[in-house]
Length: 256
Image (spheres, helix red, strand yellow):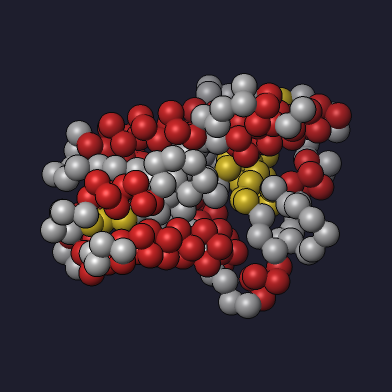
């Protein structure tokens, strides 16, 4: 049974995204829409709704830049806009992993997963979505942005006096025979201690790869390798600091 089926055959990403949109709508002076790459509403559906607006601000739900995600999504959106000759109205951002409120949102979620327990007793693992080494070798910025994001979060944890036993990074969702970014999450789990918190650093909204792959699949693997306390932190979803981050990004785009 696939993780998708274990989650009831419905991805949770749409529900979480709708909630995010509702909360963001309350704090910005603009109408907020969302579009998806692999399920409706697609870019063409949203472009149809916003084509008469004077300005369109497109914020990718990918905090790190990659030609495979951020760039391809923006190109798809602009391609649909060209059909209505409104591509000149679009302003966008390449990445925002360095936004201070975004990193505060990440720490918020890590603290929620930690609860009232001592961070010193836990290992913290950042799990990033994998990417083929071939793409990275061609100059893709994704890995550099992931590594930089981890450092920003470490700084925020330090500011809040949260000191984990160890902090590590691994990559999930590898498919096929090609070499992907390493270490692989399934290998990293075998090296960990008894208490672990995992944070899905590539994702802004929970989905089948966080709730399915990380929680269910790797949760089972963790038990097999003797991890007694395995926790997966939530992604920002509609966290207050994430809403503030998106608001500041929007306000910065307005000034361009």
